[in-house]
Image (cartoon, rainbow, N blue to C red; front, top):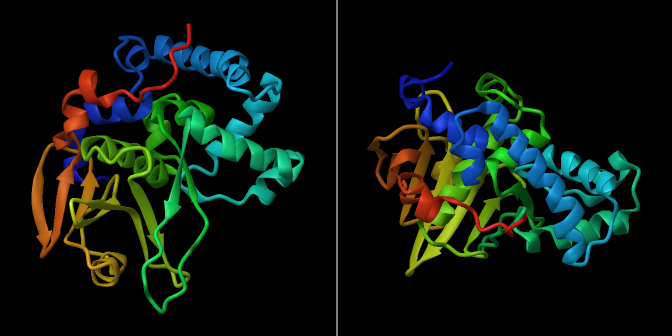
Length: 267
């Protein structure tokens, strides 16, 4: 069930989430033109940019890998499973996973290791940096298809996570995620000017304090935790926890200056 705040957020938030932050995709009046631009962008990226950067594989193989990686968006990477799914050599998949973050197409988010007696996850997560590109790879062409997709929450998480990193000027390696083997998790952890900041993400439903939030506040000694949701409002949810609408973030307010990812310029 969608919250009233989310419904009020249409169409700006949904459109940006669906089409991504590439100006030519987001600003066009036509959904068809947005799709065509993103398809052309990915093809140019695979056929021209990747070979120029040293990854000389055929486009079909790169395209298949990107579509498989889209299904791992927001998840802990398992290179061996990806290799089995694609019937590719394990070493080749690992080479792609090492290479692609350098192209700024995907983000490899490293796990934070806190000095605790708890067992903590040590493998990275993978996110496509532009929501419009991962939506295209998953075949999501409309807002309804996006909103009812099984990966909806992870797709929102990746979209909002990038907006937070840009707004907080966290840099390429400024963020981490934290997760214990018991299941407690914080999707994004930032260290900023001696402050420990945590971020949770929720695309729909009533905002509430979860057990994971409580554990993260205590175990990571957070100065503050933000719950990023659709909308243009901000309110306190509990002590040290604030609900913040994504439209209040600086990157969202000024797309032209802050909101576009600096991908290679492909002609």
